[in-house]
Length: 188
Image 1 (cartoon, rainbow, N blue to C red):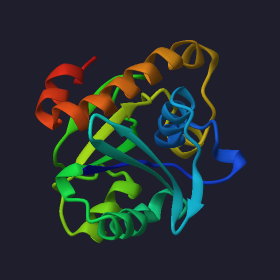
Image 2 (cartoon, rainbow, N blue to C red; image 1 turned 60 degrees about the vertical axis):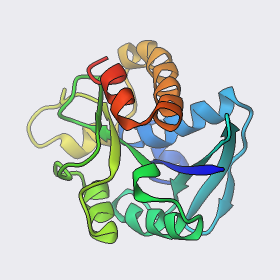
Image 3 (cartoon, rainbow, N blue to C red; image 1 turned 180 degrees about the vertical axis):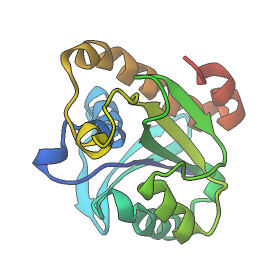
């Protein structure tokens, strides 16, 4: 059975639960709720699994905090013997309009400390990532407040549709592969 590691980036703790920076956790929680999955705290993160058409999805929400996510990813990739091309890292992106989707098979960290740590721990920039746009609607010097701020009402009104799209994207990544998924979802 083929295994895939689907990693949602975020920060642990109630005060971060509904922040823009935690979209990775939110997407995995939404998927889990739709499929009646339960996360369990294990080494370096919360884990749950989902099986579909002969494939196993291992969902990971690292409990190392965002900026140290690489340690948890490396541990679970190694433990489960998952090839690097079968990992998908889900993160927020300030450089994209709210809710927009950008899938890439490699690239820079774009100034994102979580991606920077992953790149350092995996020793490569060639890993699949799903960047979820959170926009840059903040004034100069207010980036941290914005990223760690909670969704506004306009964003919340649109979020469930974007979360449904994210569930479709994850299933496509596992069942159809990265190239087809990029062609299907990028810019949507």
